[in-house]
Image (cartoon, rainbow, N blue to C red; front, side):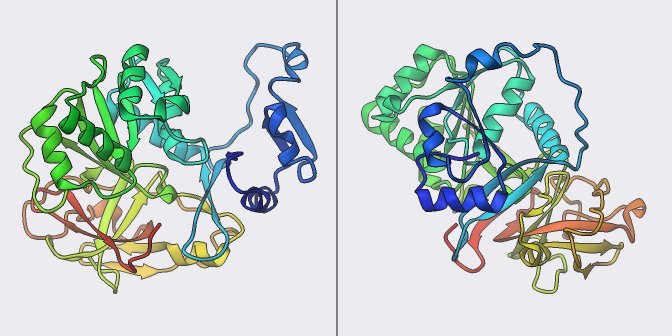
Length: 374
């Protein structure tokens, strides 16, 4: 996806790096790419031609490992990097999100995010695959928090998926001006940065359990969301707001510098495994090998062997694992391999995020290991 609001140099880089051959856009944006894309489909000016096509479902030869989309994320230096997500990862995330958020055909979900961010994936696919209604926000409704809330009320929105920073503004509005949330709203998802504990406590006091609040976490490289934490009116919030436990089809590991599990309560680097892992960084094999690693598992330790050439070699399917979100019975790492897992390869993404397991099995985010701003 390409956001026409991006600087032209960034758009040019993304089009060239992804080797885009066909562009689907509105006529007013074609000029941004006219010299760089060989074929363009205009959804407005070409509609008469499009309308003559067959309306039946097309036969699809798509395989699970085929590329579904590429989202470009900003690095600490240089050009943005394209994160390549396969169809199997998208499908597994979509099914997990539907279950985690209890999405049904009765929901009305606001698409808040630009399509150039992977948060839009969370808003679009679980919604449409359940027959729910996707409502596109307008720029006008972002003019102020009261205007935003009023528009959501008129549209009878049931689920909001918001950047944490924007949610902070909503909490401030509720506290200072006693504004009301939409009566239809049942669930608010937040994510993208640290939730301020004081804001969560204010929400608990003013809002309670309806709508439900959920703090989510997930790098783009793990297909949108990897962990989620439900916050109720009675949830005790301490110095940090937990990011929760792994959602379905995801495993979480907190490891030290030697890639060994750390004890509960001890900080380490958060590693993520499961069906949501990206296929690769597009055209960046060295970075892919650095950030996506393979471990062999036994009952005593996780031993490391790095992937040599992920772009050329078959990608191993992630074996089933006991849910990392299960609360441990002893002060061991929350993920203990089962006998069926031993000596099988485990593919993990090194998030670069510092975290620790809490005694109840939830994860607490502690910041970036290198203090990098993402």
